[in-house]
Image (cartoon, rainbow, N blue to C red):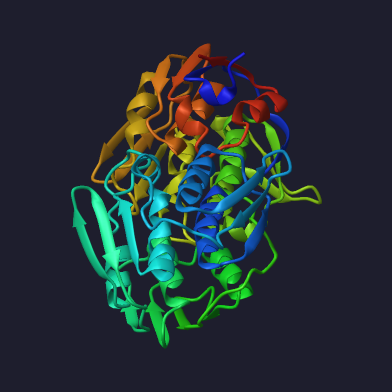
Length: 427
């Protein structure tokens, strides 16, 4: 019997209210930089609450190729990484092309070997996501960087502390440059850094390993370089706020009642504000965050702008688009992070949604109903959004592109079924 990870699509019978609790996995977007950061530590590190998703498996493939010894107990969500005997400074090209986060190994390899070769990263296909800030930040700390034939080749003797200001907030670039700065000679000051929880937990992990990073949670970081890092022993991956937001929106869209746990409200401030503004009932209970959906006719149109944390995350933009597609009146969504991230709008129109997109903004006129059809997800979050659309559409909906879902959601179909959804995997 094929596994769910081999499925190419799902068939959904719409009209079922989701009801029940959802255990939230460890955050994929925190696990990936944490695993890369472990390359800076020449001792074993144990990570708890590691999500069993394909992107993590790709990162494990990269680290194993570099010479790290990894023991991954998927059932226990536990992983031990021993980077004490790294052997290579060149990341495998096939793995790097699969996932953008592979770029995170660049700074650790430079710190360990003085040289690194990493292919230009791949990932979700919803528009260009340049890595200029990564490379400019590393150059500011003394690295020489050449990009040719789809490969980044960098060299350095030792990182030197310096001042660098990011032109705009970038999660990946912030983490990358910090990983270079922690072992630099002297002090580094970084301005306009990203504030996402995934950034904060990676920096806190580095401090637990002996780094000296000041200003975590603020726009400015001051990093005093140290000579070596030591294992902090165990580190727990934070809950995945994007998965939690996906299930909360799914519960609201189906008029159901869904509780996600664990999930601190501080991880999703603007999302909760916008859902409440639309008329969705959200409560914090002893079990976790609870959403009690209502008929779309009783909800209100809203305006959403995606912004860096604590703003509305771009990774939940496709999902809330689905919710608003059936809310009476005119809603508007502007994505300032990835203005071309609206491929799902065309697919939602196949289901009967009225959405027009121009210059990074979607104008949504709520319709009374969506009807089932065959649609295709082209990236991780868009595919999740189309599944939510299938849940609320009348009749049957087939969502192709299931291979994207397994990159970032653990047991997505199993959790759907536990909430009462009627979902069939297609191979």
